[in-house]
Each structure stands twice: as C-alpha cells, then as structure tokens.
Length: 120
Picture (cartoon, rainbow, N blue to C red):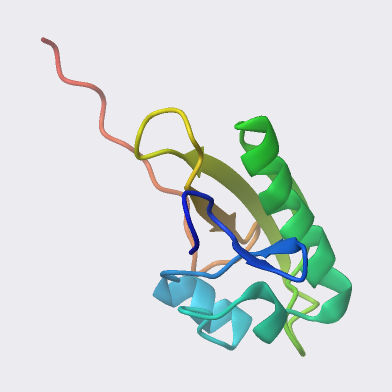
C-alpha cells in the first residue's frame, strides 16, 4: 500500500494486494491469495475485470457487485459472487477495500441466519 490509496501504483496503474483471505475462499480457489497481488494468482482473463471492479469501488466510493466463474486455474466451474466495499480510516478517503465472496449452490457454504435484533 502506498500513500493513502488502497492500491500500489505500478506502471501508472493501481495494483491491489490481498491482505487476508478466508479459509473457505482459499479452499475454493485452490490457492491462498493472502499477501499476493491480483496478477500473481488470478487467471489473466479475469485479473483485469477484478482490478477494474476494485478501481471502480475506489473511484465511486460505492460498493460494486459482480458474478463470474472462479478466476483460478482449474476452478472455472465454480460460480462466485463478489461485492467490494470501500473503507476509509478517516471517513472520507478510501484507503482499503473489503471483498466478500459467495458461492451460490455450494453445500459447504450454507446461508447464515442472524439472530433477531435485541430490543433497546
């Protein structure tokens, strides 16, 4: 991470690095992307799409949703849904992204049911 922006600048473009990847996502992907850039573990045909989603999240300061096959070798048969959320330590300048992944129809990733809210 350089400066106050969520991506590393390289060759005039932002490069995003995964700081932490959950165990279910790493198992589905067949690779743990923790500490890696998009370019180092994502199939080339998906890397630009994912980077564009992340850059759009930064530019618009709004969540971005996308659905496509898993972008890892020999995992294209797995459908993924992703939403990228902008985060800002100072409440204004986006300096991190939170990415949530879902695998529709995957028996190992059951829906979570939240408890009802407590009365004040």
